[in-house]
Amino acid sequence: MLDHDNDALVLENWLKNKTPENFCSWIANTENLSLVAATQTGIVGFAMATSSGHIRLCYVMQEALFQGVGKALLAALEEMLSASGLRTLTLESTLTARPFYERNGFVKAGDPVRRMSLMATPMVKHL
Image 1 (tube, rainbow, N blue to C red):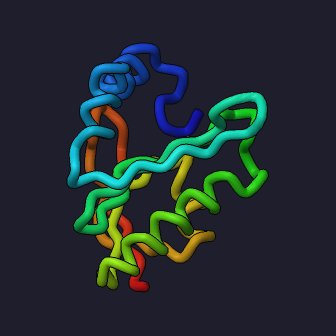
Image 2 (cartoon, rainbow, N blue to C red; image 1 turned 90 degrees about the vertical axis):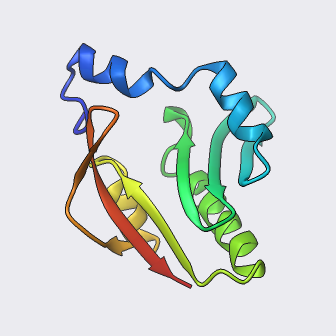
């Protein structure tokens, strides 16, 4: 994978904060908007943004990639945030996710930064 180059330590550091307890606290935080995509077989995606317009994450299960799940989650977040009056969305994208965000209207907004041992590119979208 582009992001961790099959380096177990890099992947471990990236996943360190993605515990069930942390996800529960992120979802419970009233400053976050959380969305789940599900099919009859279970959850296939999850997205989260802050109420100030920062997309924190948009994850899609491997078997649901390229089926419109991520695009639908992102569009729903954009609609909710736009309805609250926001006109600008931001995020920090991994190398793997960057083409997805670019296809959905985000553009590079700065030099890459290191986040949780991965390189991330700041991106922005004006609604």
